[in-house]
Image 1 (cartoon, rainbow, N blue to C red):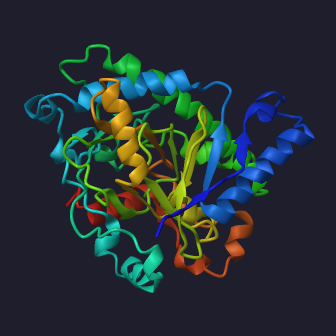
Image 2: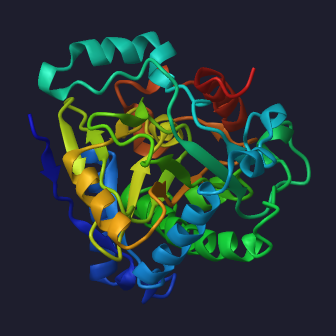
Image 3: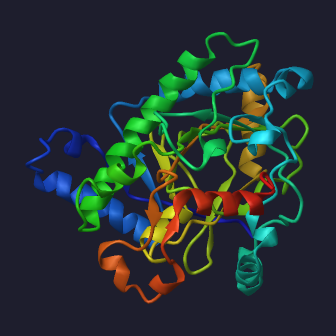
Length: 355
């Protein structure tokens, strides 16, 4: 059965960016409410930021295609397993989707209708990843491995400038959105900005080798949620992202040119008492992916599906607990006060990245 394509309203940052901090226009307030409503309904939203262009995304995709297309021995120099792969490269077939070891998640999958089931996620993902730290880190923290030094690939001397150029675009967009969401949720405007300050934010592009993994139905990133606060991506050159609604309906997502995709992670779920659940999603080889392979092959491009992702985190030593009106959620008791760094380490254990 072919997936239904989800068409989301686009949240435009322009009206908000045009206002002073003390005086928001009706148009800016409407965008804040739209952002909050989209996350509450779908755990996902489409974002347009006038400071981010499609050419910015293309430049970054070109860089990462060249990186992932390197020989294996060069990429392995950038791997840091002793730090839970939280900086540098993560080789393919290292990450195991969280759901496979989470009894509650497995129950959820069992309850889905046959047409809405994810592709088998019992094995490791056949994707590479590269983690690049974004933003400042705290001078003192209990969570050293979540705040580790950078890794610069040997063959890419321009790496820091290129990574920071794209990462700063995403960082600016998601910081602005976080402020808008606080307004949309009727909590103090600086709430999320304060909680994410000095967080272990990571630019985390993935690379899947479509010259090897191109069989229809191949799962590239198995059914999972993200462990952080918000995840933001540019548009990939290869379709394949599918999400699940709160009601368990599987949908395909399309990102308009020049726009960004934002997904709620586990820390957002925690802070909203489960009212905004971390969004389940997978990436797979679909018929549309095969068409994109033909297009990119004709252009002479490396056949790597790159996701230009950034993980935006609550700072490691901040306390996660339901905020504002979300304290009254029926599920709030399931989210007791917990340090964000502890929550991340638990999730990394489920990912089988950290002992």
